[in-house]
Image 1 (cartoon, rainbow, N blue to C red):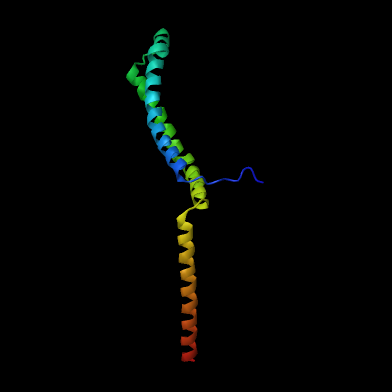
Image 2: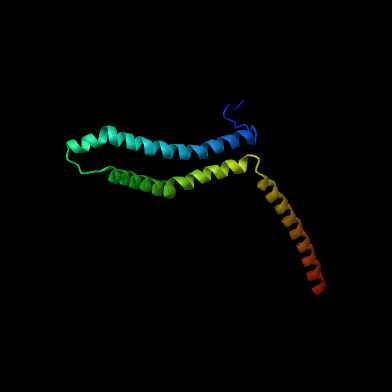
Amino acid sequence: MNMFKQKNIGQHWGIVANVAAQLSILVAMLNLLLLVATAYNTTLRVWFERYSIPLNFLTFMGLIALLLFIAAVLIYKFALPSYFSAINDQVYKHDNPIRSDIAQIQKTLDDNLKEIGKRLQKLEEKGQ
């Protein structure tokens, strides 16, 4: 018995998980905005004033946005190709209707190639 073998439990759980994941992006953005505002006003502003660092809230938010942009570029360039490669592998393995469509197309092509080969052989025999 292979305890690591994957089981397909249907689409319903996948739909719920996908919607929750998409919603979590918006929740995380709101959470980050509130967390950064709270951190600035309760801790960081006092620290910036104590060490004479002229960093107001808008500049601080701009720096956070810049860091997030840099992280997004790095994720886009390096992490997403690997992520989509893994997703494509999983989608292909688990109940993907494209697999049966491709198999049917391949069978049709093979049958047509055999028929074309037979016709070509007959034409070559007639031409000799």
